[in-house]
Image (cartoon, rainbow, N blue to C red; front, side, top):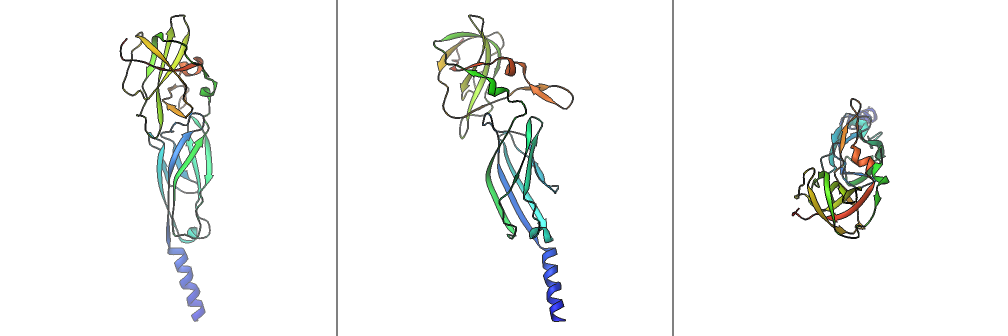
Length: 226
């Protein structure tokens, strides 16, 4: 009788315990290194999910109960976004810990359309004038990430090029503005910038035309004077 009681108490403990698993990290574009915002991060086999913020950060709390804590903890996570290939990975959490944290995960995911891998970088040899077609300032100031604005424009010789300017979140230019571009070297570190997408078929996004058709890309400095 005592043995049966002991077994019953043990089973009650296993089926009633709760274990907390906390997961946090950053989702990044594998091609550019930029943060991937608004991607869904979900524990497989459960209803727990969250969405990355504009910096690609996420924090997910998962509460497993009963035998799941010991026998089959939900340690697989999937990351999905309309613009990226779905990625699944396994958390390195011991199944015997009632409380475990997995922090500062960095996950690089592949874009479905790697158009940035086709950009052709070159160095400007001299200061030029550029007639603005499209200008997008960097989304965040440089800090833990290096960011750049994107300027599409036409040179005096009729070429259409893209100019990236580091840390430009303030200077703004309008279509048809004539601006000066001072040469700058392409840095040897990873730089992120805003990607532009337009509505394609219902429920789908596709890259902006300039992102796919304008390939020649240079780094430069755009002074405020025009």
